[in-house]
Image 1 (cartoon, rainbow, N blue to C red):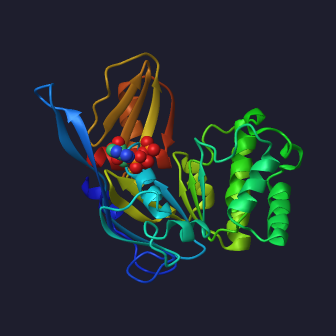
Image 2 (tube, rainbow, N blue to C red; image 1 turned 180 degrees about the horizontal axis):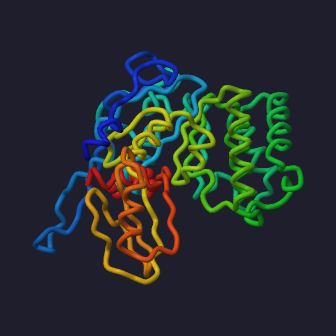
Image 3 (cartoon, rainbow, N blue to C red; image 1 turned 120 degrees about the vertical axis):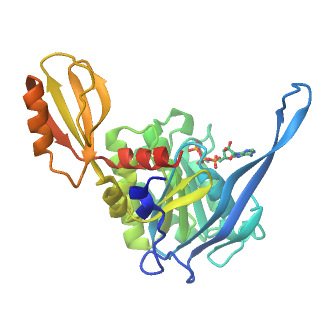
Length: 340
Ligand SMILES: Nc1ncnc2c1ncn2[C@@H]1O[C@H](COP(=O)(O)OP(=O)(O)OP(=O)(O)O)[C@@H](O)[C@H]1O
């Protein structure tokens, strides 16, 4: 990890974020998950046993009513963490509690307190109309009739499901199905909602609708939300706090603004030259990309862009230029690049 990224690994203290050693609604202490896999070894004949440390000693606290983003690249360990928090997987080490319940030991009891939405899979019955799926959820969770009716009416209104209740799930669009899935996860009034890629594949309008609903749910009901996503706009619009996991380890736990802070270490000057040229060589400037006559020059954010612009303009005929602040994706990509 680069020196200027050091701030990224500082884990915030116990306070409004719920992080740190104090009690939390979700408590994760030095949790590990090691998978044993068999792969073909050098001999190609025998399969050798390997260990995959999917989650490698993670600790965090989430306070009741918090909405926290849980992000990281593919294979970082996000789903494995969520599966342990639902009780589907048993940790290899460490301690977990959700609403005071040990998920692996009391999975059924926990299921009444949590809701889970996987963006890439549906928990609804494919051939049944939405309404029938909800009736099954009603029975499965033994939701009192009045509460069920009230919750269903609220979800139908806020998620705009009225016209869809009698449509078989397989005929719903992805966005409609996602709204249907979110409703199914909330009919039993869970205290905690785990969302795994809730906006994946949705169009801009559907994404906005899902985000608005989640924001209202959190504000009105105080539902604790742990949100896994590759879409950082989800995080920007929903979560003050974000945790970044990579190679099974927590790399960052803090305010989203902190990630921007990290990113401010470097800015980019984009120059359009009159014609293509070799990468520009200037002290303290790094050429990150060249595309025909356009070059991207990264420089420390603490430096002014003016002398760089002057130097480039003196050496090359310039057509256009702009200075770009890093976006959050670039910041996170940089964090990962720094680690590897
Ligand atoms: N059942 C399993 N058996 C063996 N290895 C597994 C198993 N489940 C996950 N892994 C491995 O553990 C690591 C973490 O996987 P995980 O699915 O938790 O990552 P992720 O962050 O959710 O990734 P993605 O964003 O791609 O869903 C990966 O190397 C994965 O291959």
